[in-house]
Amino acid sequence: YVATMKENGLTFKIDYANVYWNSRLCAERERLTGEIPYDHTVCDMFAGVGAFAMYLGRKGCVVHANDLNPTGAKYIAINAQTNKVDKKVTAYNMDARHYVRHIAGVSEFMKPQIIDQETAPHTGGDGVSTSAVQLKKPVHFVMNLPEIAIDFLDVFRGLYRVILKDTHTQKPENAHTYKFPRFRIHCYCFSRSNPPELEIAPRVKESLGEVPANMKCVEVRDVAPNKRMYCVSFDLSEQIAWSDPIDLGKYDQNTGLPLIQTHTHTDTH
Image (cartoon, rainbow, N blue to C red; front, side, top):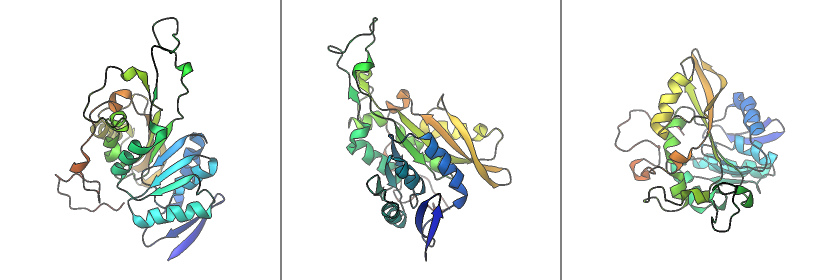
């Protein structure tokens, strides 16, 4: 059946038989919304029925909200209309990795500004002043699927090259003339270790290729004895963004799992 939930002045229609909803994340939705400025763009990779998306859309953010579950994507659109944020929130129904590739390939807000070294003013030394270039607003990626979201960080490898539609070329010699927006990632995960980074950091490194120097880990809530949920936030480094992109053909679009591995469990997202 379809239930109607009220939360902090927002209304959510939820088909409980087919989508996941957790009211205990209310405080976290408020916290993250408070952290993201109203004029930044947000890509929500595992949006469910659009809980984060509605909060952020109401604040003024442009939100591209995706969910692999067609019912989730359907209710993102319904909830956006219900909360009068349908001009801010767009729903997608894709595998999360393909969604990021799609957005990176078609969206103007992710493309870099190009600095012309011949005409740009210099900064006294030989550095180019970026004051002459209006940098685009930062883009945030929200990854709220704590059981496996870290595994999807690999899609950010080579993101600059995907945006430039040149995935086969290594970092170009003129890379410093491309001024990309800041890409900030908010990835949810579980940890049983103390401190949580003992468990989280190796998983991030395996998927992303490095442990970001600026990684911030915020505790969200207790899930079970000795198991807590965290939000790991960091800026995507240029080194990773210029690295080799992954081959999406190696993953099952319905589960996000690598095709070369055999798994006995099923992915519920």
